[in-house]
Image (tube, rainbow over all chains, first blue to last red; front, side, top):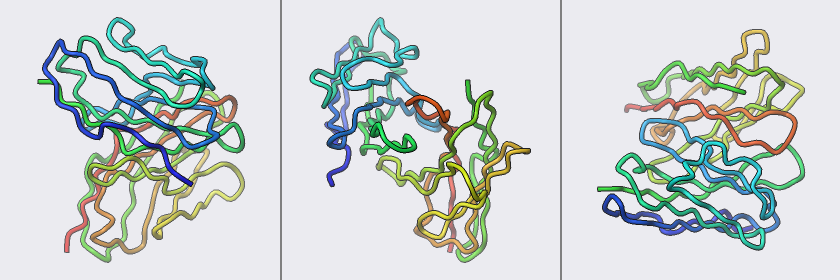
Length: 114
Length: 114
């Protein structure tokens, strides 16, 4: 079974530029999460999707961050315009509707904003 | 809401010595508990989880953890560490009910020295 796929793995941009990250969850997993992991901290939820609907986006900075999950499968997370404090690893995770909500993580995208 | 405290940001230990990484949590509802490991430039990998039943949980790579409800703790242990165990370890919780995101601690860096 293929794991959670993310691309790109690394991205360097200048502040005020825009950037997009892509995530493909494990096949059949209805729930998809985007987490932000700042250096030296644990991951923090940005947004959670159930199929193609948003369950929780309370911690998403909506003035600059947006995310979508068209067709309830893969997802994109966008930042526009980026700030220096957005430098972090962006982790995507997915879980099925059955069982104990175990979440499977992708390798992450490391974003550096200069 | 939930919160997770990992009491040690770094734990240096010699190879083949025992180790304990401490985790305490706070929650107004019952939670599932998890330990994840993160190797450099990789995503999060599940080490073990407590769902219910026996409070002593065994995971991969020889790790185990004990759930203590009265002390709201979920400490991770290994009787003999290897150089390859050097990594960042995260404790996390999620509520029993609903498909909710994980709340993570700030992580503990385990440094195994020869």
